[in-house]
Image 1 (tube, rainbow, N blue to C red):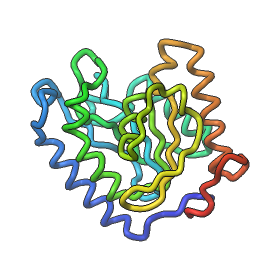
Image 2: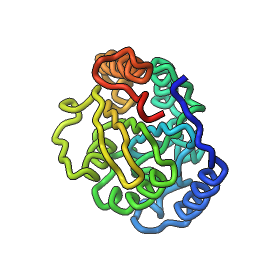
Image 3: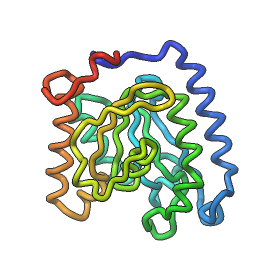
Length: 213
């Protein structure tokens, strides 16, 4: 098994809990006035794998957890295709509050939330980040000074980045919600996650995570 659990897991969980409490009282952008709940993140932060979406939707806003609607159910399936279980990974979003009417997050909202995301990642110190959708992908690539014009130009591949906490692989793909509106996108996502599973298990010639575990 390629997963290697952090020895200081309790400390990681405690620090993420502190960040979550700060997020709950955040009023850095207008989304604070329309939210029901903040959605800091959920899952196991100690195995070094983080999935980053774009922003909470209606169901997430109600429950305070990421990816609990139809897109979340599909994401759970996709994670299984990669040889993982949802409870083994940590899932969060770039923006922690729901934009009205599920519109795309705005740049000022992303900027307001970005320090929280960076702190979460710095605490978790992931060896693999899976970005879900264009906003998540652009945000993570910008941290490397890379501008992504279109997610289709970068999706489905592993990129080697160095962040403040060390080496990290980044795997961009589409947002699972894309498959709910376009059946063709379902095949693309399934292909990406199958490929991710091969990379994780060392069966792909493109890359492997072996040296990081």
